[in-house]
Length: 214
Image (cartoon, rainbow, N blue to C red; front, side, top):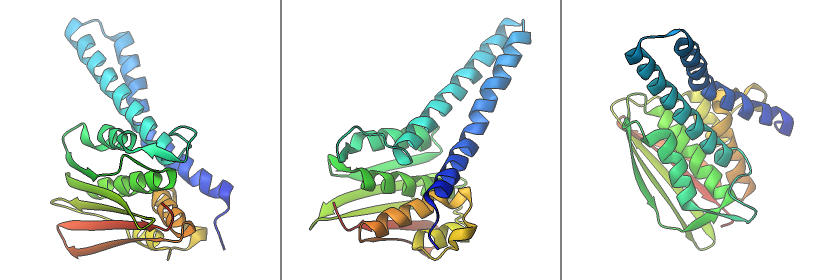
C-alpha cells in the first residue's frame, strides 16, 4: 500500500510544526517577559533572546521551504548555493556542527536538492552531541550521486529512519519523524535510483542516494 499524498503531506507538515514549536514558543515567551520587565539589563537580555529565536525560526522556515516545498524558482534546477545557505543556517550557525561542503556542481535538479537537504537534516539530527557533516554531490553519466557523512562522539539513528530510507518501513505506520527519510526514498526510487545508509564504524554514519535522472 502506497502512502496517500495527503497523508504524507500531513506527516511533513507535522514534522515542520514540531521543529518550529520551540523557537516560536520562545518568541512568545520572550514577548511576554519583555512586556513585564522594567530592568534595563533584563530587557536587553530579552531582546537578545527574541533576536535569536527569530533567527532560528527564519532559518528553519527557509530550510523546510526548500527541502519540503516548491522553492527554488520556476526552472528544473536550483543553485546549489541556496542549499548550502539553508544547511548552514539550520545546522552550522551555532558551532555545534561543522559543515564541510563538497558539492562541485553549480546547480542540481530540484529532486536532487530535496534529497541532499533531507539527508543533511537526518544526518544532523543523528549528531546528538555535535560533530561534522561532509556533504557531497555530483552528476556523472546522467546520474546524480549524493553522499552525506556524519561523524561525531555520539550518533543516534532510529531504526524507523533506517527502514524508511531503504524503503523497508511499514508505510501505514510512518510517523512525522520518519517523513524526511521516506521522502528521500520516494524521490530516489521514482527517479530510478535508490537511497541507503551504512555504518561500519560507531564514530560515523554514511548516507547516500543515487538518482537515475540528473
